[in-house]
Image (cartoon, rainbow, N blue to C red; front, side, top):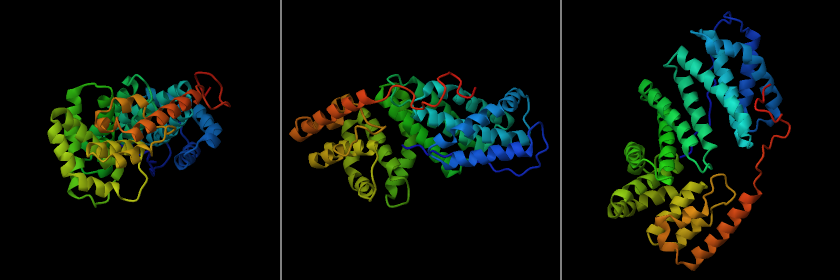
Length: 355
């Protein structure tokens, strides 16, 4: 389930008379926050971001240690948290994990300070949860799933708190389900904590069954396809015959979603290949496998296809064998060519990119 990459800017109206934060300082950091939120590529803003983070250090360090944070301070911290979290994400995207880690810590400290000031600040909680969720995405290729699970667990706890505060907010609920879905997929992939997988499947049945009840309603069809996959896999572990019956009973509804004119993600194409393989429709299954991009950031290791029981019907198929051989070769060659160093050559190769 794709997690929504959005940090909400908190616009607060107040008289700027507190502490050492001037109205000019607030306006400057708010302007930069606008630019960070409005740009997917932060390279042109990097000098400004680094300068702002460095300039803010005395103020934010004082706020981190403060027993209480006033209203005016929180405006500054909200903006600072958005800038640092966005920059930390950008550094990870550029394969600069070592440079990102201290920036992640600054963002985390800012959100913790905001949470301390007001444990029921829904905007801060949502942004904090999204921060952890986004950080988790960049560890999806790790052979050890622990770092990603750690981030997802933190995000889950924040969103659980948030939906208790705002139980009717659909956006917060979607973010919560997105985190649970990613956590479930990770546990399933690494064969961890079967009981927790069952618990997550039970929670995620709610949005899945809502979609199945009305497949023509407006919703994220990508999320639906992935939820269907997860529910099927969970049911299949418990009762394979019941899982196959559920899949066939809901085939038409699933296909209604699939046939909408849209480009599918990697994970959706994988599920659809498995879906049609289980229905003994090899041509359709192969058509989705052939859409997989070995260079996509969400590409799947060839070994996963070898070990996937849902594709068993295809393994003796010559077309499948031909596709699998080429995919494996392309995947391995691409991985060898991937850069292993930080792409940001203009950055200092130190552990502290804001010094």
